[in-house]
Image 1 (tube, rainbow, N blue to C red):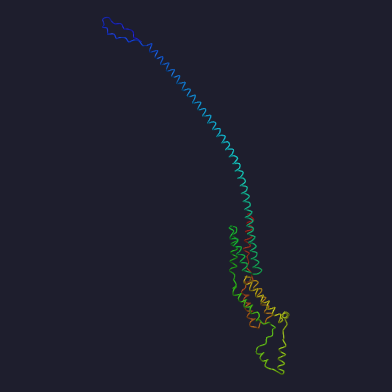
Image 2: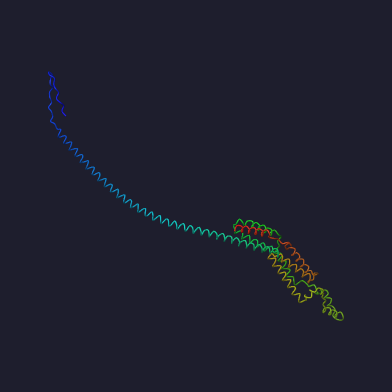
Length: 344
């Protein structure tokens, strides 16, 4: 806009006037309008491009989202199938676990039954051995046989690692030590003495056996004629026997052979009993042999007296009259059986 011309005061000097420039106002306004229109058009085009680009991006995003949704749906379907498969497998595993637990329970019950049956079998076998040992001691006095039975029972218990068997093993050990501590026979020496007796049976004279003294035989052979010779011949034909004991009638010269064989069999039985350790049978057989010798054989003979003395010494070497017992082991066995029955 142009400023209005100022009025000059009279008398004042007028400054020199500048040349006025030509006015561009309409052109500048038009130019500015065109620029503004161009800017608006450019802004509109840019906005349209941005909107189209944004729309395309939105379309791309939506398409990508659709693909993602489709993939997610596929993954969800796979997850569902996997979950169903896992559920079925878990059910199978649970069924198998239940079956395994049932089988384990059955196996444990079977093992308990087998263990109880095995324990009962072991206790029954040990009881049989202990009864055998007790019979050997009470009836036959066979310490060696009873000791073998107790040692066999102890070997069976050594293979049973059960704490309940400890009292039974302790009782067995005590009975074994008690049997071992009893006086033992010199088996080798005793058997040798019995063999000597067997070899000398034929040398024992019978009680009623007539023996001519060597001096008398020589004297009787001297007279060769007359009454003395006749008397000697008559004496050789006559034999006097004492039959006061009715048992002596069975021991004729021919029956003496049978008697000696019977005594030899008795002594052989004594020999075998000594080897087995059956002291009861040894004592019985030696006693019967001594009785027969005193009844049927001539005790005035040195061989008979020596044999009777040896038999007496052999009888003194037998076990005492009171036989040992295994009552401690039997009682421990009963307690072990009751304990297993309470556990069963």
